[in-house]
Image (tube, rainbow, N blue to C red; front, side, top):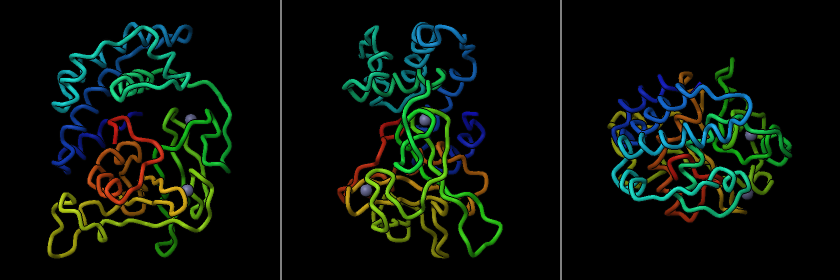
Length: 249
Ligand SMILES: [Zn+2]
Ligand SMILES: [Zn+2]
């Protein structure tokens, strides 16, 4: 459910993201062992999951995050504040999201047409294309929610943030000149053959898009964490991701 095997695979494949996947796997350990009760899930998570998120992060997190967590004071109302979409620091947001992964998200207001999750009304975290039977045709475009496990079908030509149609730019790795993109071998093998960014020229927001036709083993929410070099390149170009991922990229 949390893509443990895929995260293990990507930790080996992408040295630049080894720390991120190391932390992700430590969090998966916490999530998988959480026996969340049906009633009072939020309070239970605050008491039993949140402290373990802090420990896992201090132990397995990349240095700056581990240090920040060790010194952080987490106030009692953090999860409620996150649910109410109050202003939080990046560290607080991280702790809240990592804890809330085990809490079922209530139904909210959303609709497929506006790019908001039809289950909870949350914003999309990542875009992906399903594998197609026909190699000349790409599969359906889907969006995966940043707040709940829901995924929904969405127009391939429309910006999920502002609704603009037809003004998107695809940033494939081949066009990225940033040296952090890393080892592109002379044969032209891409480091991220299945990942690219899709940005909107109108609102300057973007999402990472995962092509399951290129890599059928991909787990969109997990693979998206590996795209840090693409994220850095897009930030450089003045684009902001519609929703930063759990790790803050
Ligand atoms: Zn949702
Ligand atoms: Zn837009």
